[in-house]
Image (cartoon, rainbow, N blue to C red; front, side, top):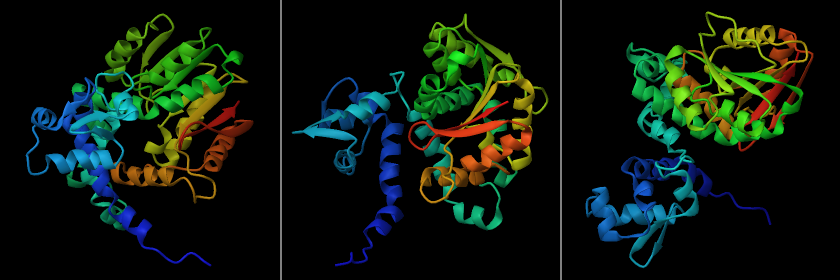
Length: 337
């Protein structure tokens, strides 16, 4: 007997913003950081969080039903996942990207239909303001939060690159658009023979240096200030670009790949990683929706397939290319000069 048509998945997806906003609000309110100290009774927890009596129990029990909290009797506690990843006081905190989703992306994505019809961003640019990066880099506090958020969303892939790429064959590397420096740091921690550099705009320097110094890697990781639109890339055996190319239009993507080619010696490698869209464009929904996020946030950015990136690398002169899965939706494309 064939499966009968069902509206269940349609309704679950159409109303998925309910569960998303419950989680995002819980992060904003600080539920998981509060419970990192240990289980708390309902009355004490709701009072500490400043929840109104009308909705407090429904809100906390919804988090239980969604699998983000545990309840024993009248007391609530974090799950193992939320305790590790959503406590602001732990280095494993990944909530920064979700805080940005709550404050920036959630309102902007309400205008996705308009973006699909106009091809125009729906952030500050929509009303004549500055773009995402200009807005962030103008405010040191917001920039630091944004770069920490990028660390959170990239940590798993960064660790995978640090351990799965054949680093024994190389001595130096540069992380282009290094942000807080987590990719450079993970590589250095896993490969003591390497010397690394982080390349980004000068405003990033104190944030990078604070992060690297905190990990005890200042003797092996250095910051190089610069603008990849205005300058050549620093020379190194390996050039890395993580979540960089998707921010820009095709000519800019090709320009950055060409600059990486020029920065490498013969035998050097370019490593590009993103939430690559699968070549058939049918299974990596996250990569496709990330591309829609670039529509929302940038004038010309878009995500792409591994085959697309291999083609751009070959056009730039790379002699061999390959795609390698990392973790979750992320994969890397490796080009050898």
